[in-house]
Length: 372
Image (tube, rainbow, N blue to C red; front, side):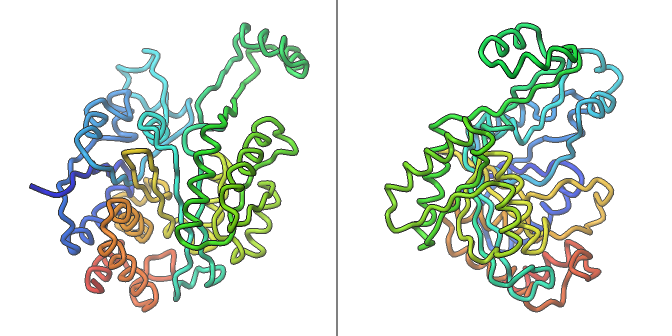
């Protein structure tokens, strides 16, 4: 019997390609696991009206964690148009299955390392090593939205906030509302995770990023909570920045930042920016971590036009597998995998198109296998 059971979720597009690369490397490591395949993504939305079928949800209760590839996701109108004709007009509404997964499984902590590996010609600088903690279940991605704006919601908001009334002149059928809902508990949880990481790995600062001068209530809650948490970690500095200025400073002096923490949307923006500084989304791994379960995914999209061509850089997927091994406490396997990836990058002989090469995803994975 295998030591671990892993939910295996390729998704669609290049998700299948990079997951094949991960399997080559995990097998070479003799990782003792049984892989349980699950259906998720765009194809199941089109054919079933459900991008995250219940049969896949059931797998999470049988497994230790999940490894996820990539999915195609589109706005409401395009999603409606893509449905099987028999399903159109039945009231189905598309949702992002990965966002639903995060909320359903309470995967509250999104962890995104952005590290420059020596020899990568795409590095902005070679001394970048930033870890970003992104709150994963609340904020702008909590999914509480309205369009058109219901009269009852408008009336209630107008009663409690005078600034709301002016939007009535446009006609409520012309008003869309997205909410940014944050709780003190979630803010405290994500900031504490950032400080605990800094303490464990001897990092000297944690930077909390928001926009409290404009988003006074939600941003203010995040900053106040961060200050309270920071008092428990006297050896670690708390830096406070606004998201717009932070993006500028991250480009200017990325090497001075060690650990960063933000709510959902700002964390998403920061992590993609930081990923580009170390080579782009082809190097961007991530983990969605809850109290007892985790889903690991590269942060690139599904790139449908490249599906099946094994063209995209699989490094993000391989480093995501490394994060999975770390979470499972298979520290030596994780170290071996990262070392092999780093050695392939440093050698510079096997490179996908984004790095100026012509090798396939599988050839990169095979080079990592040889390095192992």
